[in-house]
Amino acid sequence: MNQAFEATRVSRNLILQFLDNYSLEQLNKVPEGFNNNIIWNVAHIVVTQQLLVYKLSGLPMMVSDELVAKYRKDTKPEGDVSQAELQEIKSLLFETIKKTEADYNANAFKTYNELTTSLGFIFKNIEDALSFNNYHEALHVGIMMSIRKFI
Image (cartoon, rainbow, N blue to C red):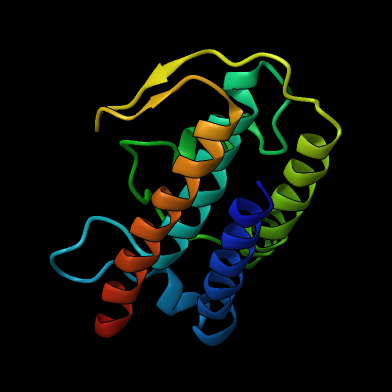
C-alpha cells in the first residue's frame, strides 16, 4: 500500500499548486461550460476520500457534516468559498492523508461496508477504496487542469 499512499501524496502536492498559484477569485470561478470550479474539485476530493475510507469503514471522518453536504457527489458550488474555508480545505488536503496512512499502518480499518459505485467499481475492503481514491483524484485533477485554461 505504500505505492498507493505515495500516489496520493503526489496528487495532493499537484493539487496544492492550484491552491497556491491561483487567487481566491480564480479558484471560485465557474467557467462557461463547466458546472463547478477548482476549489469545489479540491474539496470534493477531500470529502470523497473521507467517505470512501472512513465512513464506509465505520470510523469517524476528519471532515464536518457541513463539508460533506456541500462537496459530496452530485453537488455543485452554491456560492464563493471564503478565505477561511480555503484554509480549512488546504489543511485537510494533507492532514487527511497523513492520518489515513497512520491509521492504515495501525490496522485501524477492521471492517468495510461493501460498495458498488455508479461507475460499476466494487469496493470490498479498504485497499479497494484506497486504490479507487487515486483514480478518482486523477479524474478531478484533469478537470481542474481544464478549468484553469478558462480562468
